[in-house]
Length: 239
Image (cartoon, rainbow, N blue to C red; front, side):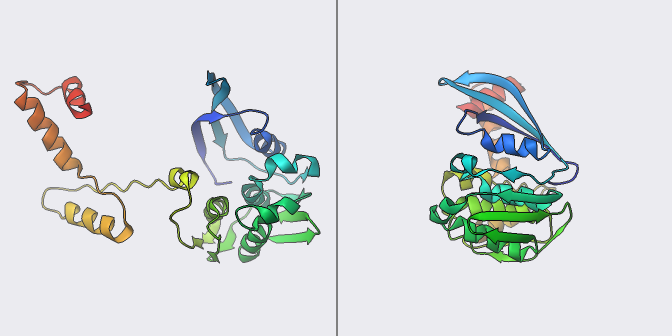
């Protein structure tokens, strides 16, 4: 849904209980490629390449709802950017997941000024490939799928989307929100102080790369190596 984007996600498990969302997105016009097929623990695993796509609205039948139940929040985000009407039928089970995800999706769409109708358990989203309003606070009720979907929606919003309590949402959230902040500069510029302050303020782990480099160099010299080449340094660092 973001312009000029290309992304490869490696080692993704694909089987008949997990591929429904890819089939739906392809029906909507998504450019998705499955690369480097291999077998791990008896399961098929692929690298998945996705590229910026012009999506169109479709109808999603109630029959596939059970295997798509965890994917509707992010499908709603895709539908909001798809030209035309996307109808998602039979969403009653969404009310009984980690949170009431149907209410959560409606809240997200409403605050981002996306047109929709709710007809019983069927959600109709009138999408448009355009920048959304954003600038909203989304209460996700500690539901990691609603949190991730809300932040993805923020990528196509004019103003940022904020969520509550971005911690303690389980392993999927930890992988999704892995952030690396690298600070560089000349000696004495204050990069170490800035890094420690950021680490303290945002509760990020702090890794002093300069200390690591010096430690590796000292260890190489201690074992009697007069020349530090990449292979020797890498072996010392691993140990």
